[in-house]
Amino acid sequence: MNHQDVAEIAETANEPLLLQQARALLSGERDRIANAANLAALIFTSVDDINWAGFYFSQGQQLVLGPFQGQPACVRIDWGAGVCGTAAKQGCTQRVDDVHEFDGHIACDAASRSEMVVPLMIEGQVIGVLDIDSPRPARFDEQDQTLIEALARVYIQSIDG
Image (cartoon, rainbow, N blue to C red; front, top):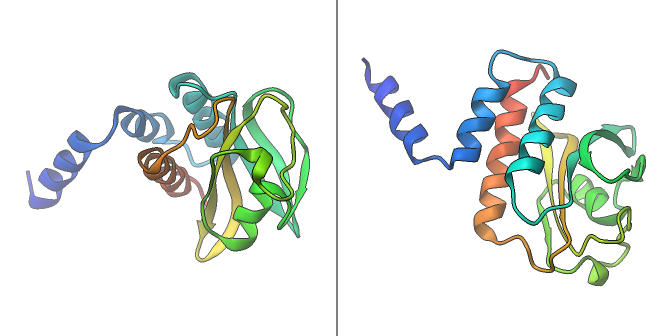
C-alpha cells in the first residue's frame, strides 16, 4: 500500500456517509444524465426535510430541467432569474433561508421555503446547477453547503465533460 492509498483511505473514512455513497453510486459510469438521475434520487431519499432535488443544465442563456426527484418543476430558467439562474450567472452557491425574501424567486413548488443551488463548473464554465429545496425555512446551514458542494464535485468528476 503506497502513501496515496493510505491518504485516500483516511480521506474516505472522514467523509460523510452520503458522500461515500455518491462516490460508489457514480463510479464506473460517465454519462451525465444517468449520474444526475442517480445522484438526485440518492439526495432526495437520504437528506431530511427536502421536497425537491435535481439538476438544470445550461443551454445558451438558459437552464433546462434535467433529472430530478419531487414535484414537477419549471422547465426553463433564464440565467440570472431566480435562485438557480443567479447561481449559474454568478458561478457561486446560493443558500437562501427564505425563498419568499429572494428577489425574483421562481416558485415551482409553493411548499418550498428554503433553497440551496450549487453551480456545476467544468474548466471555469457553468454547465448547470444542482438544486435542492426544502419546505422548512432556513433548512440549510454551512455544513449542508459544504456537503452539497462536495456532492457537486463528485458529480463533475464522474462525467465526461
